[in-house]
Image (cartoon, rainbow, N blue to C red; front, side, top):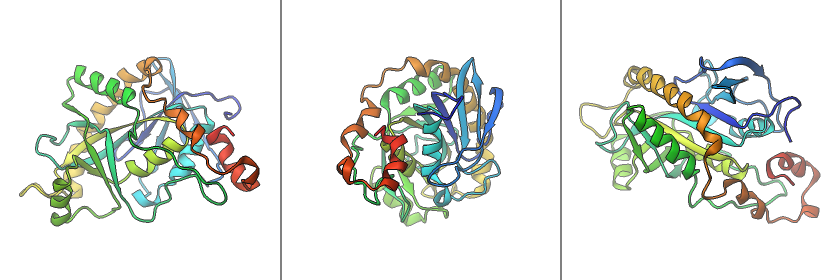
Length: 288
């Protein structure tokens, strides 16, 4: 099911600093309405190298949404309604390891969810489901993005664990040291919730983490908003270069984990027992 007149297989979700895509040609704006309210902003569609793409800034184009305020369910539902199958998610992160320096890109393969009270599922209200998250991202998409980043000369790292904190405040030094002792590689505020919902909705979802700082564990280089802002410009320039190169290649990537198939066996409630209201919300996402 797709919105009338729209069939866009690839979406980019932009994070801090990446509010628009100047590289998009034949731009159109879509105001999507969903059962979960409005998305973060108008969805911008267009083409990159002739490939239809949807772009959604997760914090809004004017950056007016805190991480915990992002309407993640509405964002995912809206992209699904456009026919999107692959999501590349870019976001700014802090580094928890010395080798992951500011301006480097990280393509994580795991996350730890330390958020509090966020809605991170489409299930509930009469429909029970549990999706596997052992490997939460589409490894094939991540591998291709990493390979192309290296070809472009972007300092990049493959694998690692993303610690998703609640925010909006940055870490204390004790928290930063604790996260390092846990073996986490990077820290941010958005990916875990987004990834859980993307898995439930059957997307091939891959995050690209843009390092802006060393969190606050490294003496003399503690994070503040000015530090983040100063690094963002170079990161955004590089993520745009990468997207222009990688988007035309996404349709040929062969998923190893069959990401869309997880939803087929995750719903435990029998169809006849799902309330009509819950069924209506889930029908598009689960192809019921």
